[in-house]
Length: 159
Image (cartoon, rainbow, N blue to C red):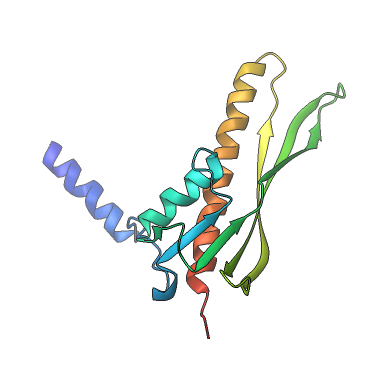
């Protein structure tokens, strides 16, 4: 029975078009990048480094092309208020700004913003879990924004 179930599940997955996401390939001239500011311990820089490494990009401080990252922003705004006037949902907006420059300060990709949104459900009697959920959502939005950043770098053409 088990082999039949495994074959059935694999057939269903392949018939629906499921496939694992392949790394994004960047152009040859940006296979080596420097990241500014250089802080490998910040969550944004760490996520960018890991994602670039997965795409085959080498991080080198001496690279002629620099990815300049601005500080990330997370804004919270009231989204839904319940009948007693308490906040039931908040909208989290994560913003990532970046530009690509060379060592002569020529702008290769002008300053761009990437925004992602998520809804945070507020449970008055479960504040610790709300804080944990907020951190999880911010990590998820950061990862999504970094993937968009990589796709924009991949679309860059030096001509």
